[in-house]
Image (cartoon, one colour):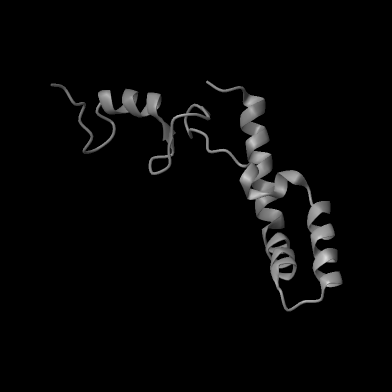
Length: 101
């Protein structure tokens, strides 16, 4: 089980990303537009730099919905490999069978 503080920190980042997504996208659009004057593009880059760092989507890290584990995460199931194996062994995931050979 992950520390509760780490899980809460990730939730806080997620809220910041959602809050600033539109503003960040608009500034990026201006900054990358070649038809805009260089001064406008530079001002957009400065405004983008002043936004909180944690509002960037690249700072998010996927975590297991059940345990909060940050590694070995399956996107489709939103859980880690360890919890996936436990639930599959208990027969709680429909259609999943433990392989043996």
